[in-house]
Image 1: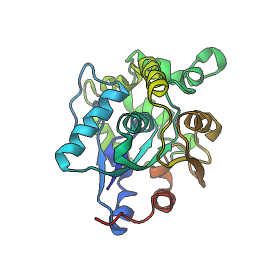
Image 2: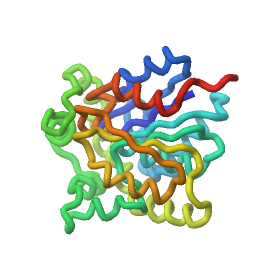
Image 3: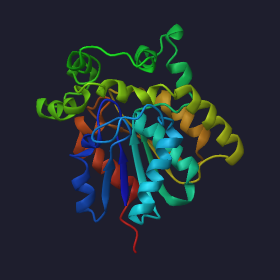
Image 4: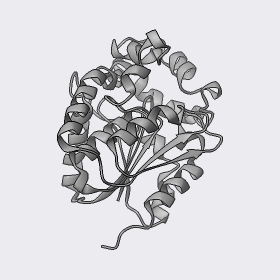
Length: 257
C-alpha cells in the first residue's frame, strides 16, 4: 500500500492525478486529509506532527495495514517523517518532498532575520486575508511554479479554505513547528537515524533541494535524491505523471502478499 500526505494549501485532492498510476501498478493507494483540511474536523489543537502521525497510525490499524510506503510533500513531509520516526518497522520506503524538517533545518529557514520564509511566521499567528487572493498569490500562480493548479482545482480547495474558519484551521499545522522541532531532536537522540530507504524529491523550480537534503541526511542512513523537471513546489499538481514515475521507480513493484 502507498499512503500520500498532502501539503498546504491543498488536501488529499493534491494527489488525484498521481494515484491512478499506483493503482495501475498494482498498489492500493490512499490519500488522506490532515486535521484542519478538506473534509476533516477543524480542531483547536492536535496539530503537532507526531499527533497527526498517530492519527495516521490509528487509521492504518483500522484498515488492517501493517506495511506501507509513505509519500509526503510540504507539511505532509513533516508529518511523514514523524510517522517514520515513530513507526519505522511499518515502512518499506519513505518519500519526502518540498519541505524542511522541524529540528533539522526548518527553524533557520523560517527566520525572517536571515531572509527566511516569511509566511511561516504569518501562518503561525492564525492570521487570515482575502482567501482566494492570498492563495493565488502565494501558492497557486505560475510565478510560484504551480501552473498545474486549475480553476476547477481551486474551486475544490476553496470549498473549505473559503468557508468561515477554514483558513485558520489550515494554519494550525504551522502553530506547532517549534514544538515539533524539539520533539524531533529528542526522538532522534533516543532512537537514532531512520533505516528504511528515503527519497528526497523536489521540483527543479521548487524549494531548493539543498535546504531539505542535509536535514534528511542527518536523520536517515539511506538517502537518495531526485528532481521533477519543469516543476515548482506542487510537484503532484505541476507534473503528476513525472512525479508518479519517479516514486514508482523508487518503491518498485508491490510486495507479494
